[in-house]
Image (tube, rainbow, N blue to C red):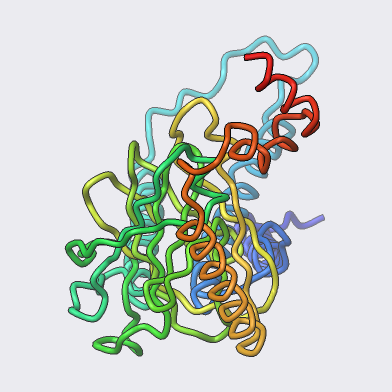
Length: 328
């Protein structure tokens, strides 16, 4: 019986490995639903890397399995193994192939980064940041919309900026984002709205001007495939276009303290009509709250009247509060 040449076995194995790695690399379900214009670019790059990783895994592990079977110690064989000192062509081969792969992936990643806008951060007059300064604790700052002051800062010069298609064009919506321990605060300079959630219209070119009040935070939206650090004293930018209405998680991806794991919120992508309705409702609500704050002077209120709105949060009844005030 004629023995099958090693070269033929190698060719067959190469075809099988290539087919399997391409199928797995292009049909995996490791990534969440795409919801931004930038997501397909990142997913395409990830799929290429995953395909190469699967191929290398099959080649390396397959070779180990074949060698374990082919060159296993036979029963009664106590002889030494064949002395092999080296193989220059093989060593050049297994060094050159990874080198070429790394270089090609590097070139590909730079192209993806450029198409996402990584080489064109803001620095344009229309995109100057306005940072919201809200007094009180992180929880109070998240929940309270009664007072917010904005102050212009230097425009971001690092981050993910305009893509080649939107270069030198102002964003449709600019939102100032501040990271604090342990919450995200979103301020809309065009409408004066301050929120603990990010609301944006689908299809709009959105620019986030990121800053941090205390330590380094990282604004990450997995469904958008975008992540950008928020740095104290250094404004950064994240520009993107959402393509699918829905609610998506926002996670801080930089260890920022003991409650880092709870620093989460969400981005809500509306249809244009829903977004306009949300903006109108919040402008009216915030104006109403502001008028209430201006109309009532805390100095004119008794202790029980001043604390009355907070009795529910304190876990006591109004009657109990009144008796405590009287007793003191």
